[in-house]
Length: 161
Length: 422
Ligand code: SF4
Picture (tube, rainbow over the protein chains, first blue to last red):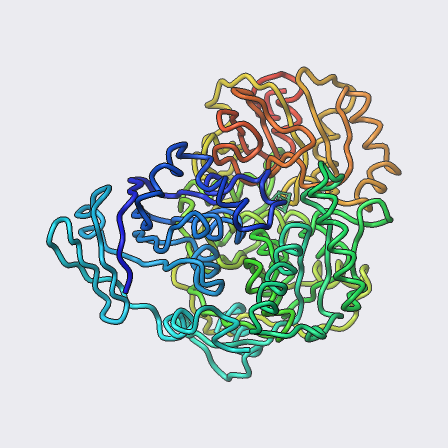
């Protein structure tokens, strides 16, 4: 169960080049990567993330490169979950296997119901998202079996090593 | 089963798999470079500190190779330290296939993987880079992963995979003159969009593919990543076997489609109907015929795993021979062996005579790292594979993706140019 406020990016195809631009790929300290999170698209991200820990966005979030720097930068900035209509496969996998953040798939209706700054409560045990601000409840797509187990274990290495 | 399903079934010791199945599979080959390598090292350090693992030895050092490509020549202290870390790591764990900048053959990871005969048909190959898909043109299952997965693979020799649905792209007939594999894959991405193959396999076949050289096929599989694909793949044929045997692979265990292989969807293209294309900023799916554009450029970039293979340089040289560039033009051969062959065959002389700069193999400006990154508002035509905001430099710079022929022709005129109009 996690709780928090929303930063909403109403667009599709947010790619890893804007989540964490290429020149910073040489950095590997998580705190340094956090400093450059979303630098390619949202100069206000650092101000927003002070009060928010959930990103809500459209299709194909995290497309582009395989850089694990992208979920690391978001997670080290304080993002705990991304709710998207769909995810690019490597971003999704990195988020799960590295246990950085929860990648949660939502439907169109849920997507349009949630607004910036809404307070959500995410219950992955019961696949439910509660919008406290709007007093609404949405269902989320359950994690596939193995992925759910890796998430509960706290990443791939903790699941099986 | 189709070729992707059969490779995944074999690697997970199953008689049969279906799209959607998730299981652990044994890995044959693993690549890491100077971005994912330090990421792996960091992951190991962190997990060791937390007491979750102990890394005394790797699963099998001989299945791993390491390249230096994204930040070479080192741009600053941090990138130099990353390179130094890689050497310490490969020494410590006995990884002998470490291709070092400034020590003979080295270059961009995906070009190295086929040029050096590092992957064979039928193998399951993972790399710490999204364009690992490239090597699927040899008939392998090849896909890119982040560094936690790669760390897991090099420690345990296995990873989980979800069997993808397969989209089949059939090309009938021979590509017309001045049309390259790059134009075909841009056309596909324009048609299906950057999400069109999300999480799926993209398989190519038909007489147009049989007719293509191995290097051209690698351009197709390279950009399956831009359509969101998990992997790109082509059934191996004699051209592939000749290609790998020239690189010392005499034995392999190839896999082919079964007669009743299934694909989620088949797309059919007539080669004769294809023409030179560009992908406009800021997405590889913004595809337009070059002739329908009217764009002045500041720069022409011939480089990357997509567009700086030997054949790509030959195409660019064909255009630049005896001509002079009108805009800043950079040529970065993908590997040292390509550089050498291009020197021996007079291509480098042609580039220099035309006024271009020839640089060392590196990812360079392809990922906005160094060696010719774009200034604000600069417009570049490039043989690379991505044109997201800021990909090749400033957030407000613009990259147009095109074939080596279009990129070279545009260098000569200073505006996006169809090579047929030169
Ligand atoms: S050349 Fe570009 S696309 Fe290819 S591996 Fe390097 S950065 Fe990635």
